[in-house]
Amino acid sequence: MFKMFLKEKWIDIFSPVNGEIISLEKLEGDNSAFNDMGKGIGIIPSDGKIVAPFDGEIASIYKRNHCIIVRNEDDIELIIHIGLDTNKLNGEGFVRHVELMDKVKKGDLLIEADIDKIKEKGFSIVTPVIVSHSNRIEEIEMSDGFLKRGEDVIMKVKMKKK
Image 1 (cartoon, rainbow, N blue to C red):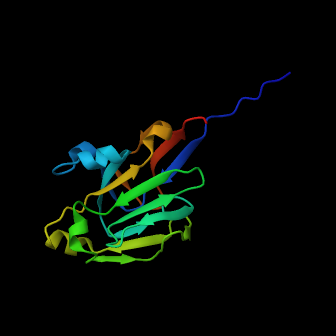
Image 2: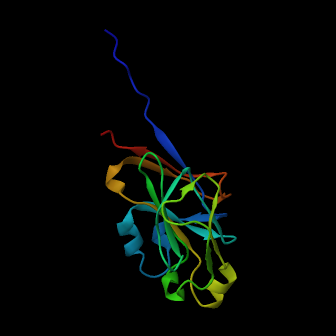
Image 3: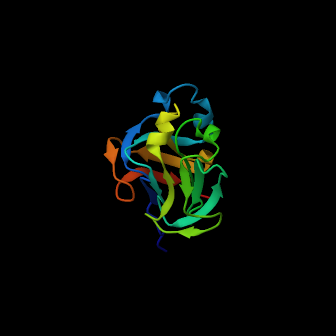
C-alpha cells in the first residue's frame, strides 16, 4: 500500500498597502499591544489605499474605520491597523469601501486613509499588519523592503496540521 504525502501548504499574504516594511519592535511608543495580537510586521505606507491581501471576507471593521480584519478560506485572519493610536481620530481621514461580511478579492479597495491628515494631526502612519490566532500557525516567513499593494507577498504562512 502506498502512503500519500501531502506537500506542506504555504499561504501567500499579499501587501495591503504600498510601503516599506519595518519590524513591530521598531514601532514608536508602546508596541506590546500589537505584539500580543499575533505575528506580523509594520508598514510605512507611501499612500493611503488599503486593499484586500487575499480573497476572503471582512471579518471585522471598526466604526472609526482605522482597523479592519480580513479572513480567508484557510481561516487566516489578518488585522490591518492604519496608523498608531488613530482610533483617537474618530474616523476623520478614513473612507470605508466595504462592510462587515462582504466578500472581497485580492486587490479590492477596502479603506482609503488620508495619510497627510493623519500626520498633520500628529499621529504615526505606520500600519501594523498582523496574523491573529498565531497559535494556529506553525511557521511564518516575513518579507522586507518596499512592497506594492496587491502584487508583492508580504508574508508566507504555514498552518499547523489539525
